Amino acid sequence: MRGLWAPLLVVLRKELVDGIRDRRSVMSALIPAVVWPVMIAAMLNFAAGKRQQADEIKIPVVGAEHAATFVDWLGQQRGVEVVDGPDDPYTAVREGDVDFVIVIPEDYNKLFAQAKTVELELVADGSDNDAAPFVGRARRLIEGYGRQMAMLRLVARGVSPAVASPLRIKEIEVSSPQQRAAMVMMFLPMFLVMAAFMGGMQIAIDTTAGERERGSLEPLLVNPAPRLAIVAGKWLASVVFACVSVGLTFFLLLRALERVPLEALGLRFQLGAPEIGAALAAVLPLALLASGLQVLVASFARSYKEAQTYVSFLMFVPLAPVFVEMFSQIDGQPWMAPIPLLGQHVLLTEALKGEPASFGAYVAAGVSVALAGWLCVLLTTRLFRREKIIFGR
Amino acid sequence: MIEVSGLRKSFKDVAAVADISFRAENGAVTGLLGPNGAGKTTTLRMIYGLIQADAGQLRIDDVDVLRDPLSAQARIGVLPDTHGLYPRLTSREHARYAGRLHGLNGPNLERRIDALIETLEMSAIADRRVSGFSHGERTKVSLARALVHGPQNVLLDEPTNGLDVMSTRAMRGLIRRLRDEGKCVLFSSHIMQEVSALCDTIVILSAGRVAARGTPDELRSQTGHENLEDAFVALTGLDEVRA
Image (cartoon, rainbow over all chains, first blue to last red; front, side, top):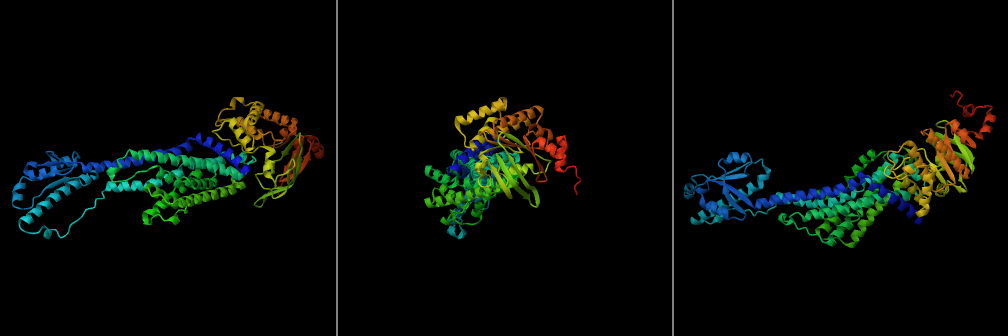
């Protein structure tokens, strides 16, 4: 075994030094780690902000003096503040000065007293998506008041209110910001899996296709080191980069999520050390397979650019389980653990939910991706024996 | 000492090396001379273990290359046809990487690297990253990489290719010094003057076979040409009109 380890470590060490000096390799490990947390935090903050704003609503009213009771009632609702509406409500809404305006007609009290229908104007711009939650809330408030009044009128005439409401809707609120937040949380495991694939990608290419392109493969292979040790050293260098990228991505994602008011989105997301450890235990072994695939595929390429094309197709691989989950409602089952990628996805999702799977499932998942990665290394070693690969440039 | 006998290698149905046998002694410079496509590079690659021979015997010192390629590789230093370098490593790091792959380490390795840097007159570029090096400088780095473990047998594939006058002279000086140290030096070239000036033994290859073998004087008398270049042309059959 020593005959394999010594040269393996020599190659690993050299490739790490070389990789750290390569801006392209370092960037590909760092960029996802930095960009995704910022992106996810921005999306969640945006969603949370939207929702909080809809809870705290300012209602501009024109003609408030015509319907004092209604306006008083509005003002008493939770989170509602009634303000004076603009002089020209139509123009103000069209130009976006206010999101909407309620216009109360002069004859409100007269019609109301006669138990006739009063027409309130809700001036809004339907194309303004940002205003939609506010307009919706205002509409619900108006309709709510109208229903209350209808009930009172029926009761006053000795009719049961139930007669007039054959159907009753019980609203279960799943507003769009919340959906967005839920989507974001669903993509969290995917970000970690993608980091495992992206972190070591450039160094996997540089140490194989890059080596061929530079013509340094021949001088390397004249050294008395087993090809397997050389390939495995390159593989592990890529694995190290991928793991650093995953760790950093995870760390920054957690820091970013701390800065998001998750409660406002109705999300429970509390990760303690055990959950973090479980998530890392689920995703880190995946680097063995990701780097193995990349080293194998990139070895077929004669140049860096060619390899990038091939390897970028591999980026679709980690997305597969996400699609499986999106389009089929299967929950994580124990038998999925040893299936590369699907297993990691299931284990990660469960770990992040705070319901880690059994120890055996982690071992099964880890061993299966490690074996798959090693198989890629063995295949690459065979490629490195081909004269076409060693000399063909 | 390098011993080659009955070596054969075909790519698809083209015989790159049809039947090559020769012996390169210690303390001597052996030159493989031949026109392009004569099989020089293929022969060297089989000796340093990157191409599998179809048939034949290959011995380096007492090691059978085909049976124990790693031990054979441990006994040779190779300057291949392509001297690809790692642009982000310094000259010294290139030599260190090769040395470590040969199992050297620590102060012993560093002493060898220092000595080589002096011998190859590359102290000015020793600790610079190699990107942007001239062809001559790159060749020096490749040499340092090839010689760091002090191999008994040195294989050089067209070592002066593309070098300027000064670098070529330095390379010749190095080859002579290696010979004087008792090493076995085997190099390939298609340049007549170079081979005649340096070699103790010349092996002339043509179309994958040994056309002639001997000292420069022997070759002259063998062909009856006083001029070695004429001898070369006669031996490789380049003067015949081929069908």
